Length: 522
Ligand code: AMP
Ligand code: MG
Image (cartoon, rainbow, N blue to C red; front, side):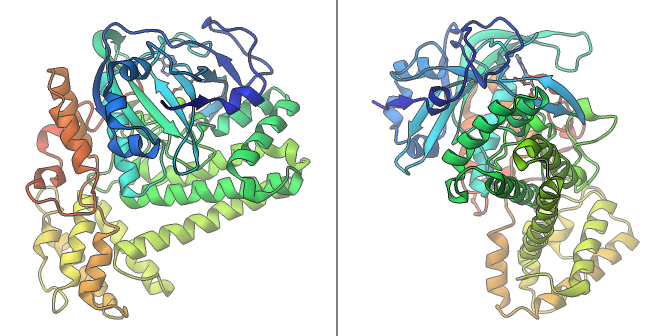
């Protein structure tokens, strides 16, 4: 039987109240709160890898007793559930206290890898931070979070994980497009797993309330448990911590850009202090390479969180964290500045490294290589072209015996709609220049192709694939959820018979809600 502990609430100040009435919680980082039981929990899916990571076994996980825990209907020994208190900047504005309005941490587990992991139920009922929300989550958004966090992990992108997806048997009312048409939808709960769910917003809230004692306690806890290599608390260590978070965030942004992931709601309450992808809501995957695209309809006017702007927002968010840490940095703004410079340096190095690798190059050397990548982005954006299919297809072009003289099949396959002659010529010219450049690599073309396939995924969690799985699940058929979970376990491998999962967005999905447009209503 797994033994749960709770380091965070054992050592950090908490809320003396223990009910779920909405309130401002001062001087505390958490509130104890019980999950609200659901009517008829049913385990829809689970991640074998996370079961293993936690040192659990599948039989235990599937047992009715454990499914009750995953639904919030029962607690396992040692679990002391709580909701975390944090604030955040939402769409550029300070929003005050937010907190876990529908997430409840059950406890921490010491895993066989020596790491402690928190288990957190998302959608387990109201907490003091629910404000006017119901504390619940719908099946469609839970399927999306469950599948995508596992898919991200298998792509190699740092992320929170998902242990399980449980249907609650209860209905949840949502007005999906905020247009006055509320509907009942099936409810669900995802059990998320991460070493910590601390966000930039936890730090920001303390500082916004000028509670420097609490800020220091939180920072010292974070250092002790998650950044022990940085040394004992003190101004220099806090500065090193800030630079490290800046670096991790920069790396994460470069990674998202490289796989075409658009988070959709990069508010500072959705930025992990560990540099993990966190809070899968109205996210999406670039299908045609459009830097201006965001799936989030709440952001339709400004496109603040569009693909092409994620790196800037990452920086803006890191700056918010820096400002929040200023009291610990003895108000030395230069230390924040250093972190921002660190972010920019790390981001450019990581991004060029990742895109070089996607093109089969060991690094970008000089202006000509930079221009090559920029011209690639420019023509990709000029005509609808599937990002994933294009990059994956390049490994078949790199092995051609000579520079292509007509558009190779794998590249033509990536286009949506007919291509004008001038554009075709532009792409061909780019391909020829790129092909010539690859000949200057030390490794032979077959080796370049192998390396490229290891960084250009064949399968990503395309928006319409998730939607198909959701539509089937709404009809009582979970098999598509299982099938997607299985495919996304090996995104870089060819999986014969599963070509359909790598296909371009079908026409029906172009403007279908859930595919191209998602709201925050979840
Ligand atoms: P998000 O942008 O989804 O990360 O959510 C922003 C804030 O709203 C967080 O504090 C969430 O806990 C809260 N929230 C979102 N949905 C609900 C809900 N259904 N019930 C209660 N709180 C919610
Ligand atoms: Mg959130």
